[in-house]
Amino acid sequence: MTFFNRNQIILSLSFIFLIGISYFLSISFGENLAREKKISKKIIADEDPIHIKEKLEIDFTHVQRYYLQEGETFTGALKQADLEDEEINDVINIISEKIDLRKLKVGTLIETYTKSINDKKTINEIIIYPDIEKKIYVQKVNNEFVVGEDKKKLFSKLKFYEVEIHNSIYESLKKVDTPDEVIMEFVQLYSFDIDFQRDIRNGNKIKIFFDIYTDLQNNYIKSGKIYFSEIILNDEIYELYRFQSGGDEFVEYFSREGKCATKALMKTPINGARLSSGFGMRKHPILGYNKKHQGVDFAAPTGTPIMAAGTGHVEFVGNNGGAGKYIRIKHLNGYKTSYSHLSEYASGIKKNVKVRQGQVIGFVGNTGLSTGPHLHYEVIFNGKRINPMKMKLPSGKQLKGKNLEIFLAEKDRINSELSILSSMN
Ligand SMILES: [Zn+2]
Image (cartoon, rainbow, N blue to C red; front, side):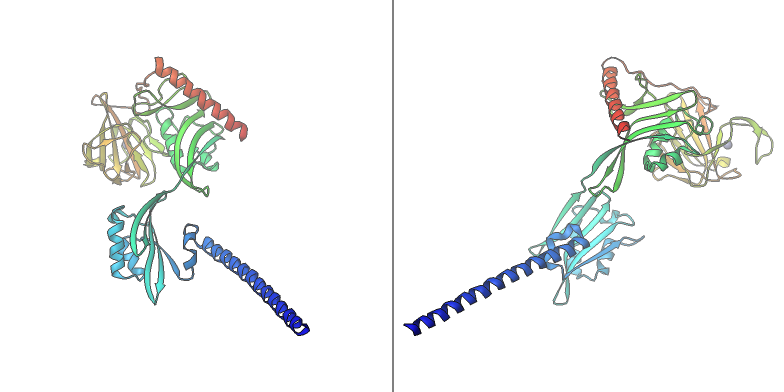
């Protein structure tokens, strides 16, 4: 009895002991597992947030990034990654369903995710980022390649700034972090009405209300639309409300009364240039005799973009004697504009091609009879050259009836958004 009891006690004790140990072991093992998981997740997250799904293969996965250089191809980039020709061919075949590989731009980012198995490198995934919003990927799933496409989710952010002009519009808007594209558009909106050289003084004010698009990490991706803008000069206020009138596919800008601000031609088809020679009699700088200056000259560095002053068709593009490299555009209502001494034409500018107002058609140069880089700009009305700085152009339509009603409601909506935004600033 005592023997049995003693044995029983020993047995029970060792049993309890064993259970205790295994319990202890299981806890610490579990904890270790959990800790390991956490660590591996963290490493991957630091390396590349997109690829958390590949956590189990982190030790073997290899990430390489390429930026396409001038003259380089997608195939070339994959070859640099030391991949098997067969896999490269498979990837090229399948990814070509989504993208024309010959049209990849210089600087395009390519990522390769590879794995080494028995010293042989094999592809997990290849990603191309053709632009800032898109990625195209080929993934290996069950030993087969599948192709897919992702668009970045973008977030619109409204911005409203009220700034005093100092030195230049560009500088003043740049100070409050306005993107270049928005500044360009703002300047274009006013090129119909305002002579930036003469009309604007330091201390004049600008208001601008627009949106931009950012990604999830709040990085700027692209600009959106200008909904409202205003320039307050010494004695005049120019305000513009964006509006798409019924049925019209064109968006235009209107004054608060619903008068269209879009004019037929721009007085200054170039940004930030200095008017260096006006219209009228003067001694020609090269020919040396008095001659009527049939246009206006804007001094600007070689390469400065020149815009089409109005919508129309290219009537002439090519060398034109003393005018050097030259473009002439035919607009509506008997108007033509011409641009001389260019260094280059913008791509796609050919005879009979349609151009939009504000579209870049060429670049400032010094070709033909010219003493320095400048744009010689002419406006021709019914065959006669007129002074672009003084031209009186049709001031656009006045909204009426239902269209006017809708516009006024849209204007009120913009104004109430503006008052909310300015109270937050
Ligand atoms: Zn000239």
